[in-house]
Image 1 (tube, rainbow, N blue to C red):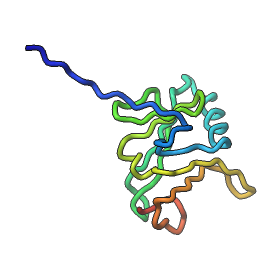
Image 2: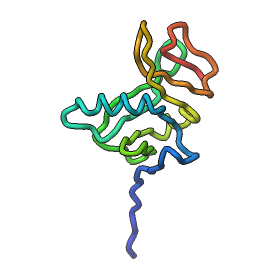
Image 3: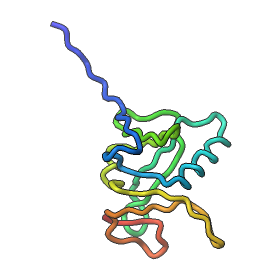
Image 4: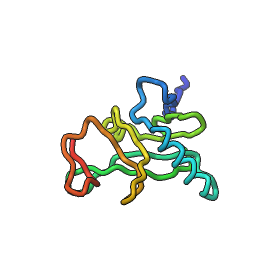
Length: 127
């Protein structure tokens, strides 16, 4: 009797899908593509996640990756792939990532409806 093994694979969804855990604004997509183009070798995509830490309990993380993980959701924004692990997807539900430039600073800004409070400096949050 033969047994079949099932290997989990990343779930690929498009940005227009209702089940995406995170959305990137056009400004954020442009900036990520710009930064990715300077990397050698060029990464396969951007990983967005939530990690423990900071004054309020959780922090956002962003890094470039060469491939998706087995349990990742892969969100496609045209040719840009965003990888989100299953645990982070729970905390990023309905989250929007924007890129903002002001006279004082420039960076990625997370707008997350699930956040109950943030710390004084704004770098961590709790749900």
